[in-house]
Length: 112
Figure 1 (cartoon, rainbow, N blue to C red):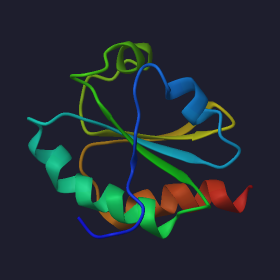
Figure 2 (figure 1 turned 120 degrees about the vertical axis):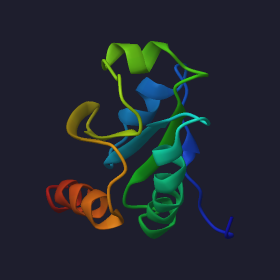
Figure 3 (figure 1 turned 90 degrees about the horizontal axis):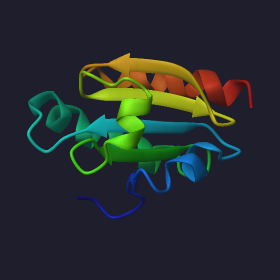
Figure 4 (figure 1 turned 180 degrees about the vertical axis):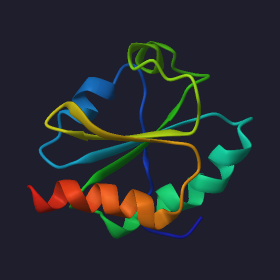
């Protein structure tokens, strides 16, 4: 991986603190065995670096953490959710182009 900022590891334990940030938060729910998750992983890391200081970018391994994915009814991965002030404001299911994720993140930055 390139030097610089990486996505934060989200866990059941730190999730609520993470999403209650005063800046938008993008969370990638993924698993090691998930092909599409591996495709979108580098995109998530790029966003973490590009939006450092403007947004929080995190990844949650659904095999290691079951409480939060269950709470949000996540059945398909990758699922990417955008949170603002602790509330989910947007969601994408499946591997999508970087532009789609960027657009959803930027929409929350504008309202900040």
